[in-house]
Image (cartoon, rainbow, N blue to C red; front, side, top):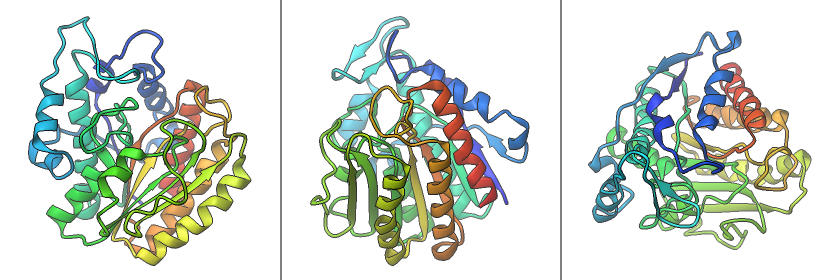
Length: 308
């Protein structure tokens, strides 16, 4: 089985300041974990930057231009909201993160790889069509889905999100698009405040809120109906928003998951992909803010991509 790892050292140049939880050390921790011997079979490559055309399938051109036009001098930073800051290297890092999503789709859809994992930052699932927020600038998962449709002719793409925070940006971008299914579990109440089960889009959005303190058993039970909905949708590609901040060690939330739970959901997604779309899975790193838990959880996720 061929699994592609896409990452770029310039993702480390996005720096939102000392003490910010979405820090360059997150990417370093993931990549160090994936340097272990058990990952020797991974294909490894660097992505290029996403193009304006690729981003404009999701975000208005004026929004894209505004974000990319923010280029602080080295050492300076510009805050876009209370959580989201741009440094000198942020625009390039954001372009590479979206570009990795596009490259992963190309490799999986052309059969060069069966699955792909993009170890990139900044994350993307909070970025709405016209608003950066929650550490995110571009909706990478939706960029991937729309690229698969525009370039590879796919009609149906599923985006599955197990980050502890609701992917409000992903939902905002696809809630009126019946060709993209969005299914998500998240702690509620918690930032950003969306993700109620009543939020259903045009019948293409499926949310499973979990209360603070919910454990792996509750998480697995919540995903049963979500996976069933995804299978009924019959996707031709599955894009995963792989956030690991539902881990019990994470400082930004209160769910009680462990590495085995992330391995389980990854295996379930891969088995779903085997039944629906020839095994094709593109996974994108989202959250996870305890470095030890993030590294171990990402490793468990990629191990499951390799063996499933």
